[in-house]
Length: 496
Image (cartoon, rainbow, N blue to C red; front, side, top):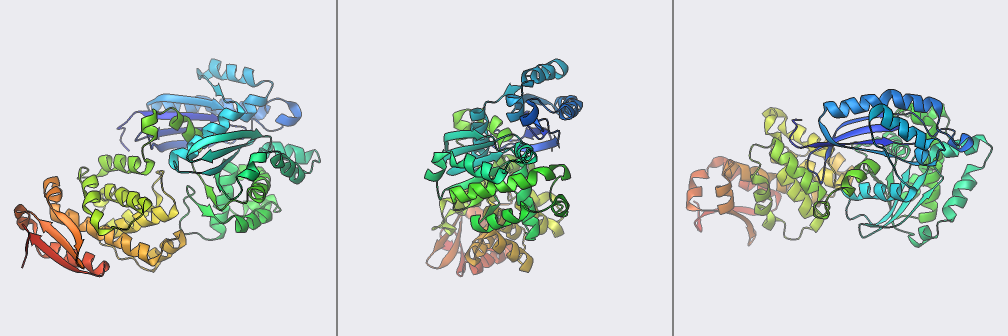
């Protein structure tokens, strides 16, 4: 990807891992272009020693200079460095921070418990600004819980329920199931949020989602927006919490060095589900690191729709006719008079992304456009939304949904009506490109509408030059999908 915007980066010094992520793209919806983690475990044995793990610290300092060099080499202009529970709680945390500065030149911001919770919640909100419910972020040293109300962090707390910390308690003979239950019972506002959505953040919890998707042979395995039913997922967590390391490693869906965190992570989430009784559990690929960047944005930028911002940035960078995206979205408005606001934003995103497939070989444009839309590393839509946009772009390049595509759509939660609307949108986009051939003036001067049981294409007199057999066939195909007939008018007169 060419460097078109300033790059920003975050180094996250966590209890279990250290990580560098470099982002590029629209400020409201940056895309990770580099992501590397090292499972150092600097918070291992912190409870018993009060200090950072020596081997983990050594491993951290073996890798931090690499992170600094990579960030500099990639042209990162803004590098944020944050430390969480382990560095915050360890008696040698201040000396660790001082050593980081002396050896690497990095200024580490040690987040308080409340700051860590709030910033993690901001990461969730960066991708789901409408989120309302409870954010849970499980790390190696602590669990952060945040009550979101109408897209704003309201109440937050940090609890000593990190996976590494719980392993220490277990090794000391503590009944960690009882400890987890007692600790969560001490958070009164959790009961008040009963029935709300639960948004999941944290590497160990994400590993559980990957295991779950693999066991169920999910066709779409994008973690962001993966949504599960609480009761059934609770049963899965119960099973995972009782499995041996050997059995867990056979799952093959996560880093083997994270295996010792999987069981305590499963126990914490299961108890949290029991207490909260959420209506759904939603996994977020965005948390603390994305929250750091989102929190630093001006308020007006934070208010932008992340899906539209990301789609527009990709449109500008990869499309031949980038100026057509918004015009196409408006051009298709009247075909979908009863659509929801959510469907409208998906249609707009599909319109902005609709010219990205031009670079592919024509024979592969439908399939590659489908695959790309389904797995784009951008924020702002869930699995049903991804499937809808992917199907629309598949049809935009002439694809006809087969059994495989329908299976992916149904698995994501789309209905037959949704499949029809996605196909109609793709056909309308295909028609628009055929008619205008990249000319905004022709597109803006024409009109596509549903009138009296017909799909009508109205063209100015100049548009007569743009009519032809291919245009007619594609208009008829769109009308057929919508169960209507087709009509072309030039200057108000039907074209014979």
